[in-house]
Length: 358
Length: 248
Ligand SMILES: Cc1ncc(C[n+]2csc(CCOP(=O)(O)OP(=O)(O)O)c2C)c(N)n1
Image 1: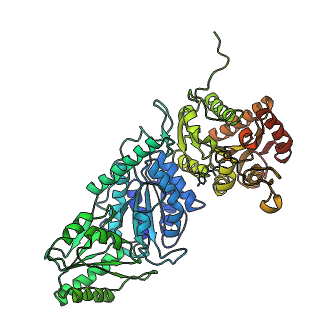
Image 2: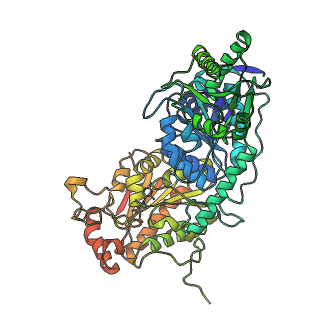
Image 3: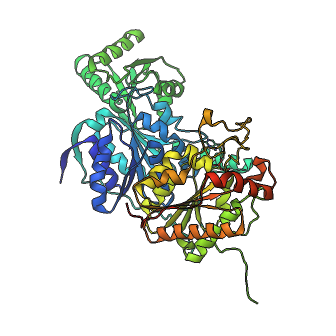
């Protein structure tokens, strides 16, 4: 079949099916309603479950119910809808169930706007709901990568029995890009008999639950979750190094859409000005590529870091912590749905070079 | 020796945590008996609510799923939609179902989810210590309506059966009461009917059970039964409000 041109939203829907996820519950919201529209057409034809819920609260609680039975299940939404899902997210993490959430982030707070934003970084990586839990957060930067990580998201959710979130924005969801589904295959699901609520025939009863009335048991459970998140930190960090092999003076940090703009800027610098600038692009936002940035911050060739985000400075805090601010961490952002353009990004990088006198 | 009374197979051997006189235990047992009698224990998934009956999952010897406050119908929908061969029921109090979970119950009913809902109307929030519920009676004193429910200020008690009855989608909607043995027998018959409709994949089914909460009403158990009869029965008429066989 080779490459086909596909809109991001539809590719996300198709990728879920390819990943073996035949159950989908959602509520429409721009800029990703096309995912629901695509799956509304596809899933009934292949024996899957599509249901438009009455709200994101209900959609995510349906995901909770379905996940309890051990099937692959997902929902997709955009920022205001994700806020409503935070209740179910907490319960799903608390009941240790696998499930996949996609947030096509739009400008906020409140009703905000519908254009690309990265203003939900805190929510995704640190504040998805009440209580001690984390999402494993993936941030693909183009449609093909979104497809590839959709496929990986389900086995990751199952490996940790923890929700996984993919974040993108309207640019990825609305843009048409070439996608290749040829090398995309779902991984088999493990055994769910020991925990899933499928009816207790020929076995002990199973219980999906997040209530622990005994504080010692709840503490123990929290410790277990902490171990799980530490294991993610050890095993799941994924990032891309771009233009990093000649010991650059300045290391940029950007993810998703902004990383693409930064790459364009870097390419032009490398051609025209011979400025040595590279990029670390986190693909997992949690676990964050802490070690690579901390190591770089100790390297003598690195004079400064530059963070570009479509937020008022959310990932910035993680970069500052990762680098221990051993070197200056400069910040450039556009907000409200505006994607930084390559020229203003180049100006920002030029200014960093000016500041460090290189 | 002939066994004439025993614990239902669908219940665990546990002492419940309920207050003396509470009718949750009666309702639990009835659900378990119905599950036993229909031979569906091995394919039943019960959805426990948030409220006094949150620990339903400990008392039922079937697969169970504990839901968030008010969301049980959505969780039940998720389970049933992906595993249509299961028998799925939610068990919910009146704060859970008629207040925080109003949207979930109405839309599950309107979609005609093939689930069963057991709705315990005790006219109060039990678990949190006796606050006003949407079903609290006019002038009834609770901790958050200390001068009695003022219908001019907070409206009249909500009648869920009557509300759900208006939906066009076929369903089985019934109200029964647990205030004496005769009515309890009728309540169990309603439950059995509700589960049977689900088992035949016919429709959404909903049984409201008028119940008592002696502790939070501040009325001894036997007198609570009288209070139910005198105050609740006139406002919450018993009977079958809708069946899937009804003509439009
Ligand atoms: C989101 C949320 N809000 C509030 C609560 C606190 N809460 C627990 S039970 C309950 C009311 C339960 O009353 P009801 O549903 O009538 O059941 P009962 O206890 O009377 O059986 C409330 C408000 C909660 N657990 N979660």
